[in-house]
Amino acid sequence: MKALNSKPTILVVDDTPDNIDLLRAVLEDDYRTKIAVNGERALKIAAGSDQPDLILLDIMMPGMSGYDVCRALKADPATVNIPVIFVTAMSEVADEQLGLALGAVDYITKPISAPLVLARIKTQLGMKHMQDFLRDQNHYLESEVERRVREVAALQDVTIHAMASLAETRDSETGNHIRRTSHYLRALAEQVRHLPRFREFLTDKTIELLFKTAPLHDIGKVGIPDHILLKPGRFEPHEMAIMQTHTTLGRDAILAAERELGIEVDFLKHAKEIAYSHHEKWDGSGYPQGLAGEQIPISARLMALADVYDALISCRIYKDGMRHEEAVKIILDGRGTHFDADIVDAFLQIQDQFQAIASRYADGVRELADKQRQVAAFSPGS
Image 1: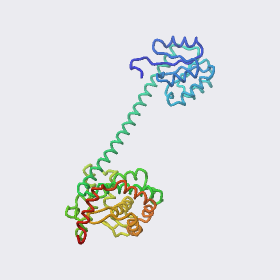
Image 2: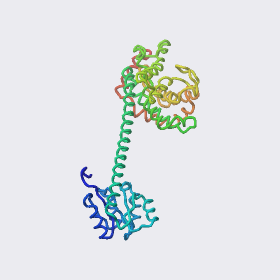
Image 3: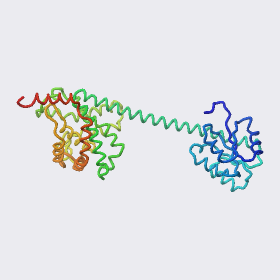
Image 4: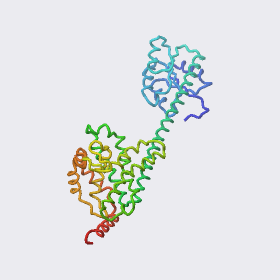
């Protein structure tokens, strides 16, 4: 890297010693000079660690012509931004047109005028300085944008994690459940995304947002009283009615967070849909709104199957977990009634992925043993 107060470096490319001596004498007071007597050497210097700030390039040389050198310089990302001025005895208009067309910034014909050469160099170095400044500014701005995007993504993750952790503090069974269901949902989305009815919605960005926001599907449980949420047994009808309000409570909690910000947050749109509608059923018999078919948001339809599968295979304080095959049969029985048929078909095609996810994020041995003891303690006849 050049020192801030160092002279700019000019690479003189010419095969004639007299021309080299003349240009060196013209430049010596204001610039450092490097010399190349052929095109091959010029390209090595230009691509080196101490690059020249500008190149004065002859055209008629043995081996590579100046035109060939200019082509090579402009084809290489490492040298494309070094300004080239042709200094040549070729004075035809067509020669100058070709040189400029190849990317040269100026064209000087021999015999040279020292003041003219210095003026042209000064102009081009000034332009290069401005271009370098703008390029650095653009790079800085791009870096800043990328940094801000990363910060926003991290803020999203932290927000979702913090909100989901609220549910975990109320329900010890939630932690691995939300991890498994997030992965189930993403696997389902990837499987059905190419079907015409899902293609427009399930973009890469949307699938990633669904994966990120899926942990909020049970956030509303923070508003359910402990004597119901933690009840070691099945709910009475009035208790079930209260439990079902967790969908509305979850949606409203996210809405309240948005109101605090004063804007509708894009990345929470799917979270609201999932929290509010993941207990809706395809035939309209679900809750809280009794939506049916295509009225149910796609995000909620995906979560519905993911959530039910995990509930079936998981041990709870009031039941043992089912075998995978039994859970598959129940989901298949709900095809077209509880679940969107296409999503059930996708599940059947990737059920091995579901098993792998369940195994990867399985409950710990101690936690599972505690649940099994709780099941035994509250089983009929115990």
